[in-house]
Image (tube, rainbow, N blue to C red; front, side, top):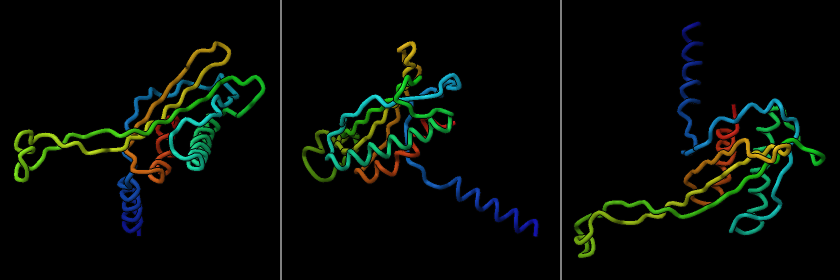
Length: 168
């Protein structure tokens, strides 16, 4: 019985450990101790993206909810009256190019430059800023980048990215 239970638990851990998570590059230092802060407010209320407005509104809601969830886990509450922190985020979606070797078998151009072929790879960037409103100084900035194929793909990566940036 104990061997069966051990095998079951080990299998579950392996499945969870091997679950595919989005490939994310992050350059955020750990979030500082926020115990001196109790409240926060959002900065921007304008669109920052070049996708259509309905998709932006949905992504904005998802991003704000995910950030709010992580901040509330750290003991902060939203407030419009004398908040301690100002929270903002920015997003960017751009095409990056990946040089790939070409086959030497097909054209004269490839014969002349067999090492280059540009493959487009959409890359999404999310930056989060926390500003101490008493000192008006930035206390933290976290930025993450991930390959995204479309809005649906970006939507699926928002929570893991924000958890990685702001989580414990």
